[in-house]
Amino acid sequence: MKQLLNSLDKSTRRQFVERCAATSFGLSILPGSQFVSGASTNQNPTAFGKAKSVIWLMLSGGLSHIDSLDPKTGKSKGPAKAINTSADFQVTDFFPKFATVADRVCLIRSMEAKIGVHKPAKYFMRTAYEPRGTILHPNLGAWGSHYLGRSSKNLPSSVCINRRSDQANGFFPSSYAPLAIADPDKGINDVKSIGGRSAATKRLELLNNLDAGFRRKFNDKGVNSYNGFYDDALALMKSKDLKAFDLSEEPTKQRAAYGNNSFGQGCLLARRLVDSGVRFVEVTHDGWDHHKALADEMGEVAPVFDQAYATLITDLEQRGMLDSTLVVVATEFGRKPNFDGDGRSHHPVCFSTVLAGGGAKAGFVYGKSDDAGYYVDDDPVSIGAFHASIAFATGMKIEKPAMSPSGRPMTVGDGEEPVLELFA
Image (cartoon, one colour):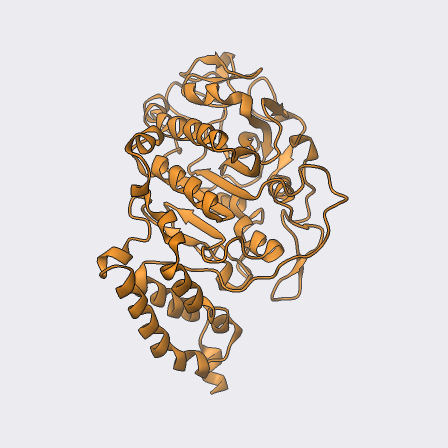
């Protein structure tokens, strides 16, 4: 029995529950019981804990800082023109709608990293740790579940949109992994395809009974971490909160304002979810890897982001949610200043990110790149410090480490300190 149990690796145990989720109603993972920190935050600066939720917008491929948020002149200049904004800084004319909400954002022009390959760079940006073969690291949603507990009675604490969850819980329990929504238009799509909420509930209860023997036989913490899955899933199925995933509840005009595409509708879904109690939502937007035909490709992908972002910031502000929602624009790296009239290569040593709401300073630029946009000139911000700053804004007690399975103490941002100058 013991040998058989040891032969089941984490992947096998994970597949067991993911099968349950997928065949019941299209879920990837739902959160189980989670630790709640009771430590006082009275001695922390005002911004500590102001962000009750985080919307993380991931621009996959590597956003060119020079062609977007940090325009340059001379040989580095790309096809776009610099334009004024509602704040005291410029962006390029690829982002005209972003320019109208610039007075609500905190722009960081001094990000630096050391990984220039897509897959490990994405992992690094999402976790603040370099990939290692012996351990998986958690994203900020999983850290939030660890430090802050559940954010909602029925809804998951973490959701990712337009991508798979990819074990974002890291070394934390699998119940901390995000619920993956592949298509924001469909939401939890299998609920309707199998006959509605009642049919999904019956199917889930049947699966629970069938798998109970498996869970009893393999009394392992990797499997036990899913024991709350069925209760949480059933609670969601029976809850009115399920409608948070249904974009048909939104007026047609509002949906059009975000843009009729997966990123725009993903941003709208993110707003609905944080409004309903989800703490961390990532929305992925692909298409930013512009080695060639940069002008044409930016002309296609930038308007999608520009429209959705400006609408999201305005929507959150009008609903009184921006002060308590931190909107993050992240990317794995920037692009090289060398521009030959066609495209730009990967460039991790200098790039830009954005924060808005959640206690971040508004209309503010932090850090500076050199005149060519090649290196950071002032106030460098590491990926670790970026993560620590976001965690600080959400109220995580990041000075208290979590223990990895090997017994190593781990922290948000790999020991880096938050950049307090980013917050009002």
